[in-house]
Length: 288
Ligand SMILES: CCCCCCCCCCCCC[C@@H](O)CC(=O)SCCNC(=O)CCNC(=O)[C@H](O)C(C)(C)COP(=O)(O)OP(=O)(O)OC[C@H]1O[C@@H](n2cnc3c(N)ncnc32)[C@H](O)[C@@H]1OP(=O)(O)O
Image (cartoon, rainbow, N blue to C red; front, side):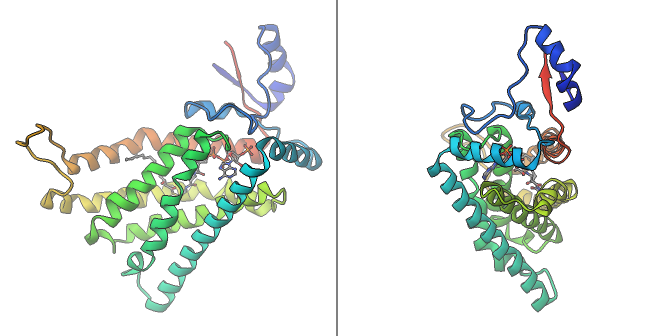
């Protein structure tokens, strides 16, 4: 499978696709698409003409909202507002804590309830995708959300001795800035009043924040390893009546290793989204 840039799609690429008997890919993928894309890679097919005039974009957005339905749009607006507010509260609490105490020690403890609530609430993103009210790939959303839930509940919440690690602050800051930007981007987009700065921030901040967040997460899991090994927490040893064994220590090692194939997929997905939205590049799959 090859890919066409916008210029190719407009000219030779599109005609090549036509002459091959393949109709050009429908652009853009709308909210009425049947559910979510099935694979991470397939999410790149949803080309959008980012180079269209503002009026065209607005018409397109309005059309999209109409097709999405009032109920789903209203729900998404409320959801995104709530999430923006939640992550803002978290961000302000972190800044206040640091200004008052002058240390990061105790910071996680002070914000953990808000963090757990809003990060767990983000499970709805997988639901949104499954029921087809957002066009994100269910795999992309699933990997993103489940890795966060794992970090919050099965690592940071469960392993108290690591809660004061600097690496926890690293991923908390990366997550918080990202989510305030991301949810406000969705909110303003749904309201058809998207300031350019928010759009720019949504598709540029991640370039630094994604690796920073991943480093924070990996260092935190790494810091947890000695404790997990010593205590044998969440592990099941043989012999037992079910004849099964599970070692959380090795599970953590495997999880760390799984970042190697999975993180680049998410990162490149975001780079493709960036090219599409900021640079107006249309990526069209063509048959070889
Ligand atoms: C059980 C053990 C599990 C262990 C797993 C281990 C896996 C390890 C690998 C994972 C590493 C992850 C690390 C991560 O946690 C670190 C960080 O997050 S650090 C901070 C930086 N992070 C980021 O920048 C995150 C970037 N990620 C995202 O933005 C999303 O999660 C992602 C799902 C990747 C976004 O993808 P999406 O395809 O949705 O992109 P867009 O935002 O451009 O949206 C596409 C279209 O969908 C519409 N949309 C999406 N969501 C909404 C919504 N809530 N409301 C309204 N509309 C929505 C959006 O408007 C776009 O529409 P259109 O194309 O029509 O304009």
